[in-house]
Image 1 (cartoon, helix red, strand yellow):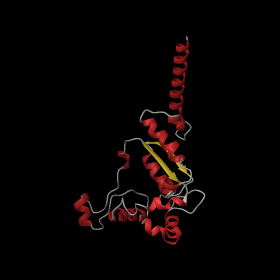
Image 2 (image 1 turned 120 degrees about the vertical axis):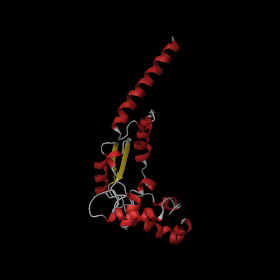
Image 3 (image 1 turned 90 degrees about the vertical axis):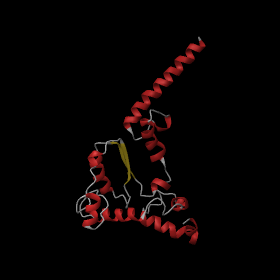
Amino acid sequence: MRSFCKLFDGKICEMFVKIGGGTDPSVDNYDRVDFLTSQMPAGAGYKTYVHYGQLAAQEKEAFKRFDYESKSENQKHYGQDYAPDYDLSKVDVPMAMLSGSIDVLADPADVKWTHEQLKHTIVFFHEYYMDHQSFAIAKNMAWFEVDTMAVINHYNGRCSEETQNSRFALGNEKCKKTLMRKKSAKKSSSHHKKS
């Protein structure tokens, strides 16, 4: 893929990336397209793409299991004629949800529906002005370096000054208190040493 993307000065791959993700050059660093495409199409099997297509083609919002498109196969796998919905109410782990407002693959309307289904477990949600591939090649990676790291740090009992002004309000408050206690303890410790 990397060799293919070098053809015509990378313009072919850039075109495919824009079609599949977005077209705002102010958001993405297209010099990183070789990185983005270097492992394609690894990481997903044929059945995954078929399942994605089934979900995209549905008339109403739902998150269903893979449809074998045969009542007998669905019976064999699920004990019923049609692919069942995933019961998202059973998800019970803290989740962060980050999305792009100009994403054509994870469409904002679908993200909104998914958020509604999982709101009982979402601890952080933010929609960035980004498209699908921006999460890998954006010019501004603060979504990860600040916001995502703030969530990760919070759930691992850590705090850093770099993430204390994130969009993750819950983590920011706890982090600010922790950093203030550390600074206070440090001042107190250095004052005792001077005495």
